[in-house]
Image (cartoon, rainbow, N blue to C red):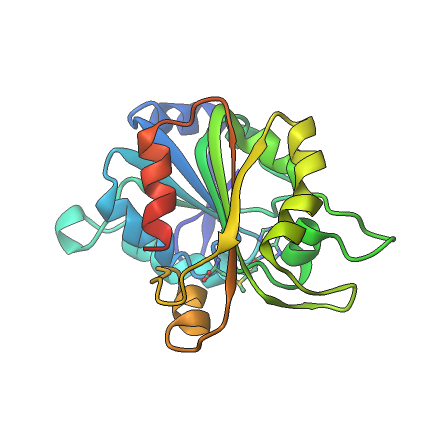
Length: 226
Ligand SMILES: C[S@@+](CC[C@H](N)C(=O)[O-])C[C@H]1O[C@@H](n2cnc3c(N)ncnc32)[C@H](O)[C@@H]1O
């Protein structure tokens, strides 16, 4: 798979990734990581977790990737890694690794994958997520109430749960909660900071679990939006 190292990227083979992952108690994957700031921030709070950012836009993750690769005393985070890939084509190296998966503020193509874009393009999230997830895994989605999709102009908690439940259930995930995020919540991703802090905009939070994800995975989800 392609791992972003800065302005360039390099191939990481499955064996190398497995060696890296074996040093951590849990693995968290942020899908649609954007500039990767959230992975970098939480890597500091969760040194026992391998924190992966996944996004097809390698360039956007370049600065954080370069930062993460520095020596620890210069801001490096050995437990933070950025993978250039689209969620609908998940790298085989990541199959079954994630105990926690987050998707924060999907938009455009990624939002279409989450919600579907009408009759021509049904929601297509559950299968790639199930491929990336460990048997025991917790997933959290944060969605802006207003979307850019003509077929689904707005979301609200019950509607999102209804849309995702059948496909999630088919892959062993149960929707555990769907609610409005508190308007004073602090979401620690770049778009979270931009979209909701002080704006009064509403955000839907949905959680789904498979098996017993464990306290650490749930703590990571909690730390994304506090
Ligand atoms: C609005 S940004 C949100 C970024 C970040 N999650 C945040 O909260 O700051 C949406 C991100 O989804 C990514 N994206 C678009 N299509 C994607 C796909 N097929 N798979 C994974 N990520 C995708 C974009 O490159 C972009 O970085």
